[in-house]
Length: 437
Image (tube, rainbow, N blue to C red; front, side):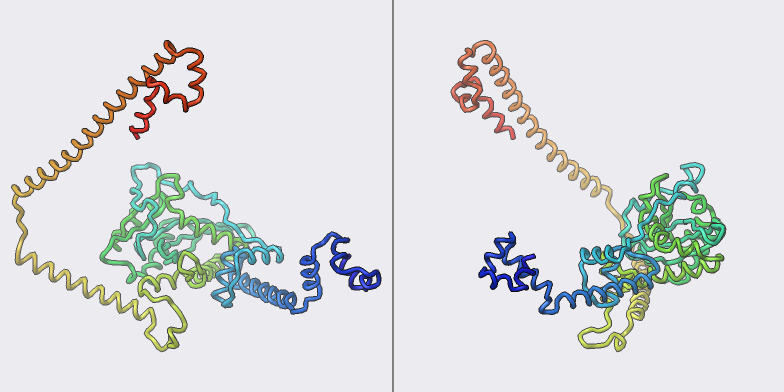
């Protein structure tokens, strides 16, 4: 109203100043001039903002089109930076998603969990991982089976996947109409065909799963033994022990379950999942993976070089590829291992280590005496503290007798103020209490 009043020239007509008009309408001068700037858009800021917002919305649409689902605000943010070199805050991403009336597709609980278990707990392998999923690259491989439905009649299909817990990369997977050991074998073999050379040969490599009957089969155990994997299993009914694998399946179903339902046959389902796995490994940029995709993060951890298109003006195409560096490092590592074995063999042949039993006994005695000395000192401290505590307890008993038997009503009234306690030596035990701590 104030804007219209001033715009129509009523201020000059009635002999008012702008300040007086602001008071009449109950507004501040700052608020008025900000409103005028927005309304008239003198610097073209609003137009630029609208243009920028339109660009962001078009980018969001492109991201949804590429991924095949509506991601969360942080995923949008990462893809905006990696795909379009555009920095956007999480809060602004949320506002634009709200304006577009889109919401992220969130994972739902898998109703299948807890059904396919073995018949006796003694058959299960121990949980050697204990949720320590970040031992190292290619050191902990997680696996699980999930179900999906496709086609007009919601035909069931089953998917098995093997995942590197450190890089979150899906190393191998398989889809079948049957949930049997052959499904796991196919997924495992696919993993070994593509990544066998990447598993460390000088460290323990674990394969962790739930207590499903397929993973307890003799066939699968033999498969792990033949490839030097150590088997580990979640505790019964505890899905958190295999949380990263559960999380992947939950996210996958959230993002493409509706598309899978539209597939007419199993071959189409397999093609769709192959494309999704390829997207996950190569285009799902994650903040906890240095803002890289799983495959890029693996390359980064192995080579120590952050994958870029340009290094100080040198195009990446002019340098050795990171894949070549990985191959060379693995080859060098293998040669060093062989050389180390040869040296160990020579050393074993040349000399054997003999230990004097008397020296061992003397060492053990010295160690135990040192331990005894430490505990003797602790015992002395405890005994001294107990003596002090008994002394304070005796003084507290004396204070109670004084209060009940000797203190007059006048003294009791004075003692309601703690500052008056210092006038009575029978109550000075509180000084000793402070000394105890």
